[in-house]
Amino acid sequence: MHMKTGVEQAVYAILLLNMLPDKAVLPGEAISQQVSASPTYFQKLLRKLVSADLITSVPGVKGGFKLTKRPEDLCVYDVYLAIEGQNSLYSSSGILGDMLELEKDENCCLLTNLMDEAEDAWKSVMKQETIAVLARKMQERRFHAKTENLKRWVQEKMVA
Image (cartoon, rainbow, N blue to C red; front, side, top):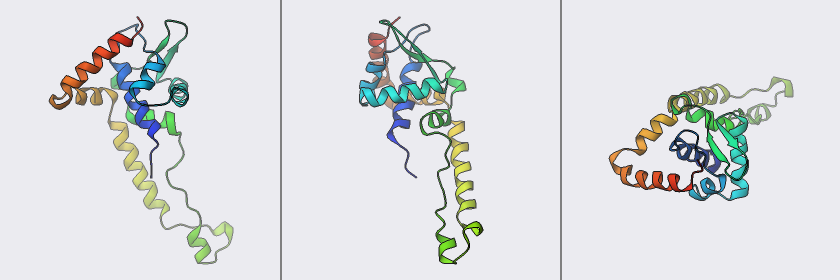
């Protein structure tokens, strides 16, 4: 399995939006710079987050983005689903059926159950980790000073 960079960028973008005071927004261009994403590509990610109702877009000169949910109610899996969709991580290509010379309607795979179980466990872990928990982890001693700098950056870039 390989998760695309977009999920990581989206999670960190949401962590930036979590630093905003009420009624303030953060411009998409500023967010894309901070998470090292091309503005064009990042606009697509932001649209996916808006479509999933994880963030909202405020149009206009003083526009930008803000969270639609409390960080306690937003888990990493929500972000993953918004960016990657609900496709299963594993899909049998029918190799065993070919090896055993089975008819096409007799498709079987010894890995499907194992992969489904692994995916369920992976989803469960991602559903337990909220944006609020990640935000608290950013406040830990080793990140604290740098997180304070990032908060100041957000304050400078935000539109109230």
